[in-house]
Length: 248
Ligand SMILES: O=C(O)[C@@H](CO)OP(=O)(O)O
Image (cartoon, rainbow, N blue to C red; front, side):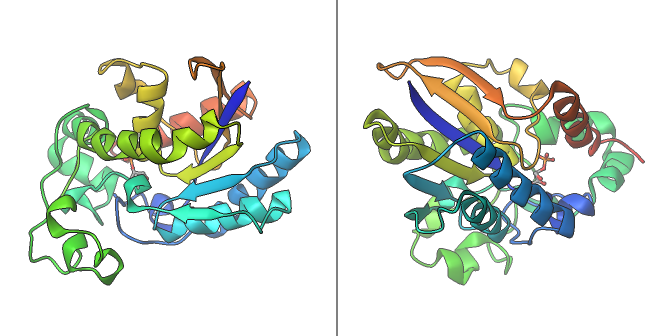
C-alpha cells in the first residue's frame, strides 16, 4: 500500500479574525500551534513515519510542519518548500473580513468567491506592494507565473503538475510522503486524487490540523482516503470553516 498524508496548517491569526488570507504570510494563532502539535501527536501515536516532507513557502504551513516533525521526532527529514503548494491567491479580497464581505456583497456572492470552481476573485493590482511579483520571497519566480488572484481551477493548474512531477514519484518509489499545505491547495489536490466533480467540490471544506491520509494501490490508483479524527470532531471543524462566509 502506497501512502500520502496531507495536513492543513493549524488555525492562523487571520483564520481567527475571519479574514481572507490567500498568500498573505500570517502566522499561526496560539490555537493553531496547539492544533499542529496535536497533528504530530496523532500521527506518532498511530505509528506514521515519513521519508520526505513538502510544504508551501508560507509560514503558517512551515510552522505547522515544524510542529508535526517535532511530534514525530523526525525533525531531520528533508523538507521541500514550494510556492506551488501555497494557498489559493485571493486577489483583492485578501485582508477583508469574510462576514463583513458577506454583509456587503451577500452570502451567495461570498460562497461563489470562496467555493465555486472557476470564478476568479477580484484581482490584485500589478503594482500593489503585496502582489507576489513585488515581494522578495518570490524574486526567483518569473513574474508572469505569479498570480494576482486564483480560482480553484487555476490553483489546480499549478498544484497538480507539482504533485505529478515532484511528489508522486516519491510515493511511487515507496517513500512515505507528508504534505503540509492550505485549505484550497489541498482541496485542489483532493479534487484531483479523488475525482470529485466541479459541483461536489463546492461543498468540501478541509479542517485545520487534521491529518488526511490517501492510500494507493501499486498502480497509484486511489484505494481510499480518510481523516485521522472522529466524525464528530470533523463535522464540527468542517462546519466552522463553511460558516466563515456567513453574515455574523
Ligand atoms: O482565506 C483563505 O485563504 C482560505 C483559507 O483560510 O479561506 P477560505 O476557506 O475562505 O477559502
